Amino acid sequence: MNVQELLNRFREVAACPRAQMENYLKSGKKVVLTAPVYTPEEIIHSMGAVPFGAWGADIELNESKKYFPAFICSIMQSLLEIGIKGGYRGASAIVIPSLCDSLKVIGQNWKYAVPSIPFIPMTYPQNRKPDFGVAFTKAGYERVISDLGKATGLTFDDAALGSSIEVYNAHNAAMRELVGVLAAHPEVTNAQRSDIFKSAFFMLKEEHTELVRALIDALGAAEAGPAKTPIMTTGIIADAAGLTGILDDCGLQIVCDDVAAESRQYATDTPAEGETNLDRLALKFRNMDNCSVLYDQEKNRCKKIAADAKAAGAKGVLVILTKFCDPEEFDYPLIKKACDAEGIPVTVIEVDRQMVNYEQARTAIETFRDIL
Image 1 (cartoon, rainbow, N blue to C red):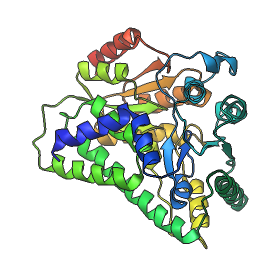
Image 2 (image 1 turned 30 degrees about the horizontal axis):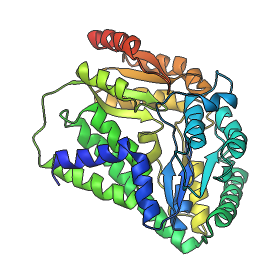
Image 3 (image 1 turned 120 degrees about the horizontal axis):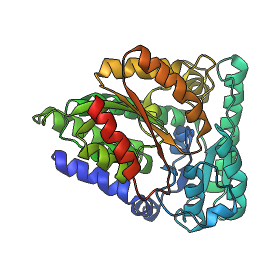
């Protein structure tokens, strides 16, 4: 496939995840939903099921409002809305981690609102670095394995987990390489870039890696398009068509990102060390850093954003703040301080899964472009 055909394939999956899910179900595979931000997909994959991203969608919220206050993350609200309306029908279970206050409460609401899809909690420790934190993480994984077995009838094998870890590490490497390749090809729009990242949640990773590798090769043989103004994005989600369209209209190009649904997913590989493969996976979580939902007293993430923007040649940093996301809101002043110290302009816009009009964001982004 050529570049455009590959980009169209990513778009097809990103735009119609339900159709992709139906394809897996029709092939006889079991599907397990994975909620933000870091679910142990490798475990689900190793048991023969398809990990399927459940990050909500840009939809009107009605039924989910019966379970949540208005001032809670719209990602969680839209995830539950889709579940209530049958958008995830056929899934064998949903695994929800407990890395923020919103994630800690959605599981109990899910149990009552969507009883047909079993809720499996993954409880991560805040203090993930010490040995006791690693042991706590491993115990959480063992509970997930037990609950998955009950929900799906599938069995766990540590050797199979080792194979799945290799699949995921290979995908991580491909996605990290792709970021640099896309930065050198401004003709790939921000909307198309978003499709590549978004589609990864709805495909088996080995299938997605194959497409990504093909795209890297195709772009390597293609001539780069006209230069645009390079920027960096940071936030939880940045996949709204209204938003990426504005960035494209303004001649801005995302050359690197610190978005939880994008590059943050692929920053950390599972290490080779560990007595068992499950131990290795627990060590991966210990090694994870630079994320708003991971405890870090020093807030090194904020300095890293400034450093990454500078290294990538970004002229500015666009903070895409998910409304009512406390961890991200708390980090913003420190991000701005770190970027100011490096002479990198910063602006912030607020997004919500219910937004239908991005004109206020357009004004802010156009102003931001004009000062770069």
